[in-house]
Amino acid sequence: MKANLSVVTVTLNPALDLTGLLDELKPGQVSLVNQSTLHPAGKGVNVAKVLAELGAKVTVTGFLGEENHTPFADLFLRSGIEDAFIRVPGATRINVKLVEQDGRVSDVNFPGVQIDDAAFAALTEKLIKLAETHRVFVISGSLPRGVTPSQCGSLVARLTQLGCKVFFDSSQQALAQGIQAQPFLVKPNETELRELTQLPLTDIASLSAAGQTLQQQGCRNVVVSLGEQGLLWFDDQGCLAALPPKVELVSTVGAGDTLVAGLCWGELNAWPKSQTLSFSTALAALAVSQVGVGIDDLSQLTPLLEQVKLVDPMDLVIKG
Image (tube, rainbow, N blue to C red):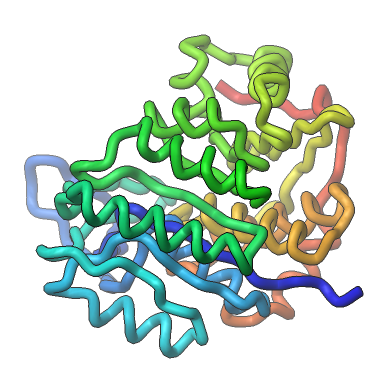
């Protein structure tokens, strides 16, 4: 049977990302940027871009400000992505990401457009319509003004009730509400898991216990990202861990979104868990070795894939 490669990504609070590379950020002083880019982003937009480059048939939706939606529309047209965004009054926010030579990233995130009840109702209606022809959805990123965490959770719940598989990636209260709606997959990183559980989670045993708890609460798959230290994937069969290959760190911007895209790609292709985890781990490693989100050359993935190690979770070493 041919795989159904259709997917919808939902970005409630997209942004134009202004990314600057510099030697060192000097707070309170003048810092000189060596290289910069301004490009359409937002977690769901990033996921969509990577999935389209992998070969998925992608539809994107969410909210875009009418005043500066053109760069997004141009990106979707170039990438062969179906544009189903709701246009709302105002301008989509600009976020600033400052990447230092040692790989440290400082984010300055601005508030998004104001979303009213009519716009949220329009998005809900659009998602219900898309659910008639799509089974896999990715909802990721922060919330714009006017959208509450409970409303975000309601989107996850509605799509799940319609029989869709929802990949959910957010933070803080939005993450908590989304988890209560029992998505197909949730991907907290180490920091987000600590905030969610209000526990220190200083070793692999405590991280594993927290991941298992989320899985037992109804999230069928829980993937915990530990950066260069590895990945943990919990489902009803237990836990599998992966050690990523060693790469030169250039930028972590978009690495988590690339990981989500890899996990989603594995599901679209009905791969076994081990294959999906290896592929996603290698894809995320490729992401941190470059500037910008996307895959310019898939052939670069092969040597990284060969270096991924699937291990027992207790073999991971958590540093500090």
